[in-house]
Image (tube, rainbow, N blue to C red; front, side, top):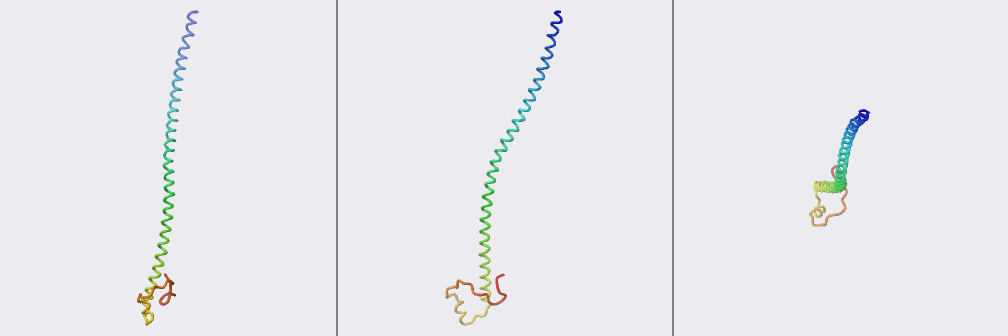
Length: 129
């Protein structure tokens, strides 16, 4: 019987070795999953850090849109002023092409102050273009 008693003791060693091997494989898979989770976490942290850069970019976009609106307003004002000057030039050109008579010659010599109201459009073709 001593042989039989020693025989069952020899069977647990291979089983224990198999269990240790399985635990080692399981531990390796846990380690692999932990490394993947850490890499994913680093990716999220990097994305979060880049989002703060995106927030800065969004703020810059807002600033640029405001600057663009200001420039558009300035351009519109300049366009209106240019059109007004163009209308004055057209008027002066029309006035210079009209024949000069006695009373108009004195007024047109620059000695009298200029009129603030725009005179009625007389002569060729009419109004502003």
